[in-house]
Length: 179
Image (tube, rainbow, N blue to C red; front, side, top):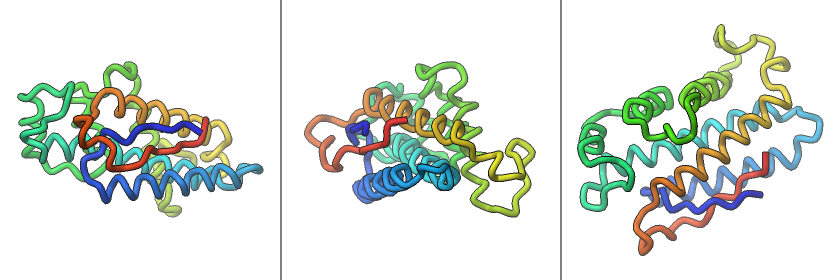
């Protein structure tokens, strides 16, 4: 397990739900010996990262006095008035303001790839970037990749965008399975 401080979360209930969903992710991984739950792991990772990344946007939009460390005030104000509620939009706003640049040049493309696989929760949808054969789409390698991405992004958010120490411990740490 990787325990990640939840100090970047601004909305307690979202944080509480992230802790709950991290527990579900651990249970899925613990019972995924034959790879039969790979799809569910990838979908769960997508849900967790959408909520976690959304918290940075939420704080930029709502925490006017507190601000968000490592986001310039002019950028925070640019984000403040935008309606951003889908993972696609969250990723694009983060790219526009360079919020995840330190994770490497391909981070935004990786997140968009995860988003496309996460959206495969709709079995009937045909996405040319994701194999139609779900057994081919949700391989052990894809599952491990999604877990690695999840851990890397959550650790980064915790380090780069912490809340002030006096309010940073209201949500317990996120325990994510080792990739």
